[in-house]
Length: 607
Ligand code: AGP
Image (cartoon, rainbow, N blue to C red; front, side, top):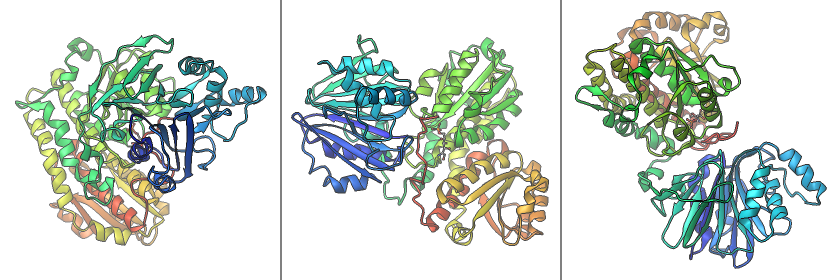
């Protein structure tokens, strides 16, 4: 939620800040602003709405001179998305400007205190207390003022600060919100994530919680929260520039759907060879440690949680271990039955989801072994977990995850095979490995088999509600299919275990109610077909997702989507693809802002 960016160098700062903000816009897009310092003068430009409006207002940055600055794109938490509430916020004396991603939990008490001390507030944001505290504590050193300020803050924050007394310098602070430093030649940067920086540099420093960065055009100094200077490693960004561009597609979401064969291949290939699955990252996990595991708890949010729902079946079947699924936002407050015999698998594309981080910390505090399945290298989840396995999906920009989900499910499938082999439950892995290696090809087939999706979208887009039904592995995919439809097309979509329909929901089925029936698990095909017949006899219009060879379905369903045949244990990776495309084309038909759906942000770094 919210993206921040900072630049210091010899060239004009505003165009670099605006370019960075465009890349970060997926993190929040209800208002935006920049503060640029020209000599000792700070000028602030803000808009309610998108970055495009800010570009227009500042003439693409040309109207804002200065070589040092900070920028922000907002997902509102405290206060409406107005220009007043947009960042940067200025101190009363005009000497400091600040941008913030995160939430200050004790802002109300601080605000009261500052008002008592005579500070005036221009906005309703929690952020504004920070800039007034900095002003209050400033006695000639911005660094000291920041140390004193953050000692007063409770919550999460990635901050960017400039001070008119220190031209050419930008400050950045990190606590429980993502922040990286970009190392340039004669210029330096900070940003919420690497997508804002890849146009400028491949060298980055990952800040830890509690660290400060003091940047000028020729120097980077990092301090801990006591002011002690730290020496930090510079890492290389491996993502290429094009990966964060649309590359000719109308939307990032469509591009990312089409990238899935490559993303899944990149995730699988390094882990399979010689007929075996191997995770180098897990070499340090001893057999003893693994044998001590009595149950697996999978925790995550949103689609990552649904990837866990789909991955569960392979763990249970192949490893013979019970799998408990917990939404991270629930687990953190549920006094969970987790101990040192539990393996907690945490799934997150961004690695920065606040609830997921909290659930991971809770699991660790209870003595569980923790394993993270994460896409973003160096993210908080990746750093906190005992073991981290990366999905190599590359940057995912569209708010609705697609390749994030498929690489997660593929990774979970591989982990199930890997653990089962290490536990001695499968001797010969070759048939599973072959199934894994075929996944990228099968995804491409699932795309190619369904040229009718845009036409089906025209038929199904004009509905207030859609139902997704399925059993077993199909049900797990239905959960994600319905979420995709909801979040980008704004159509109310509900997923039901098909057998549950007659326990209540079937009351909602009437003439022409659209029901999307997933039927790709042969062990329950007959049962799902019975449920299709039940809804059809109450007037439903059924769009079935199945194999081409499922002749029976041809006569039962009104419309069909196909996937190539694949073992049900691993089918989620394939089955979701036509549903992603359907959601995409329905949203397009409805004129929705597909990459930036309303009220959402890509990375949910607040609770
Ligand atoms: C998916 O399309 C979502 N926008 C959302 O549910 C997402 O999967 C969830 O917020 C978890 O994010 P993470 O994977 O970055 O932790």
